[in-house]
Structures are given as C-alpha cells and as structure tokens.
Length: 371
Image 1 (cartoon, rainbow, N blue to C red):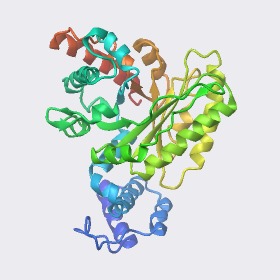
Image 2 (image 1 turned 90 degrees about the horizontal axis):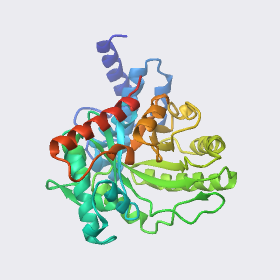
Image 3 (image 1 turned 45 degrees about the horizontal axis):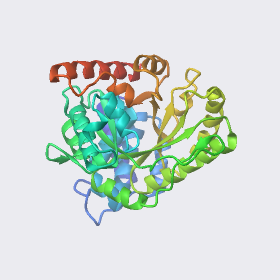
C-alpha cells in the first residue's frame, strides 16, 4: 500500500470507528473518546502503519479525558514515540546524597570544598550536572533521556527548571529517580526503603513535565524468595507511577560481583516475565537491568508488548568493557552514570572537557545504536 493510499485508508477508518472525531475536537470538553471496542478493532488490520496511526489516536483520545495527561500533551506523545524507537541512550545523572561525594571526588572536587549533606554539596553537584547538560556534546541526537535526582529537578538551568530545559532546549526526555535508597539486606537482596511521600513527589514530577521515573533495588544472591520480593515491589510501585501518568523504569540491579550472577539472571528473567503478564491493557514499563552474563539473555523483553524500552546499567564496569558487552545485546541501550562521566574533571578547559565528553557520548551511543 502506498503512503498516500495508507493515509487515506487510515483517515477513512478513523472516521468510521470514531465518527465524532473531527478537526478541532482535540481539547474540546464536549468531544467523546473512542470506545474500547473500537480501539480493539485495530488488531484486525493487516497494515502495521495504519495500526500505529490508529493506536496513537486511541491513546490521544484517552489522554484528552485524563487531567494528568491533558497537561502533558503533545510533549508526552512525542517523548513516548522517541522512547520506544529512537536511537540513543539514557544519561543517568541521578546520584543521590549518599553517592554524591564519590561522584564529586571522581570529578576532581575535594571533600573540603563542601559540607556533606548540606546545601553547599548540592550546589556543587548541580554545577557539575549543569556543565554536563549544557555542553555542546549533550543533545537529543544521541542522548535519548536523562535521569535526574529530585534536588536537580527542583533547580534551574539558564532560567528554566532542569527537566524543562532538557526537553525544550536539548530534546532530551526527563526522568526522575524516586526511590529513597535501599533497605538492609535480607534473603540476599535489598528492596527499596518505604516512600511515604511518593504521591507528593509524583505530583511535583508531573508539574515539572517529567516523562518517567526510575527506582533501584539490588540482588546479590540467587535466592528465589528474595528476588520475588524485589520484583513484586518494583511492579507494585511501577503501577502507581503509571496511574500518575508517567512511565516507570523498573531497576532490579544484579550485583556484577556476585558469584551467582548467572543464576540470579535466570530467576530474575522468569520473575519479570510473570510480572509483565499481570499488567493491565494500558500499563507499560521500561526495564533497566545489569548487563547480562549470557549474550541476549534479556532479548525477549525487547519486543514485549508491555516493555517500552530495555536499558542497561553499567553496574561498575569500566566504560570500554560496558560498551563491549552492551554492543552484543540486540535491542538493549545504555543507561550509564559512572561510565558516562569517566574522564571528566572540574579543572578541564571547555575545549578539553567537550572533547572527552563527546568521545564518551559517541562510544556509548554507538554501543547502543540499533542495527
């Protein structure tokens, strides 16, 4: 079917399925969304491009009547399409209070230059992140999204909130780290600490134009009960994120130093697949997983209908090693933190900084790029 005939066919079918959908109805409080029955008919089409257009129309009509999503259109739809299909990777800029001193030392800033846990520390780390984000090397052409710490979201870059600067100036999708750290180890895992202010944080995230969230647990041994607890908690919180109008990144990290890493990954994959099957029709997640011991171990998630994107954390591997492993994983893209900032230092000139940073971004981009 030619492009022009496909567009005509799609338009006719849209008007047939949704007779009240016409020019100018978007944003009209009197417009009516398509019925679920109508949207279900999309699967009967043989033409994939027509299916895509009509599914997008169904999501759009749903969003009109959702007050959260109505505030975020049309940016959310564009971001969702990019998150699904665009080349690039996620920049993990979400070091929290506990991990900030180490990140600053690696950046060449002494502990004596700030007071740990105080405003001065967050001023310094925000300056570091601001330099990374405003660099000429940092653009949406290669960087698909960026994960922020709450304090970073609360601050501004060049007169705009950090999240809005990312999207409006760089076309980089903003994500937010929402977990409050890890609970003590039990059954070979560390689940997330309680999040008593989650609802308030999600409201603030929506007000700042955040597209999605990220939350981290850690698995250290092949304990099926422990791994199940991690996965259950990730999906439980993930469903709250979806209900708030955002896309959650579930991150059950596997400790790369564990002697049981391969066995953990087998159990973890089984548990995640079971969790995906329990998601509702319109519930989708992203997955952030440690680089696997077996090539393409997680490939089943790449085309899973409930998975928007599969991303990898470097987990402590040096950048070159992380890139080498990642490049062998079909459809998996990076979400690197330490590997991204490796080699950057406070004292570098802008030219030196941008050269090192550009080389780092390019290497991770190429390792993430779809074949």
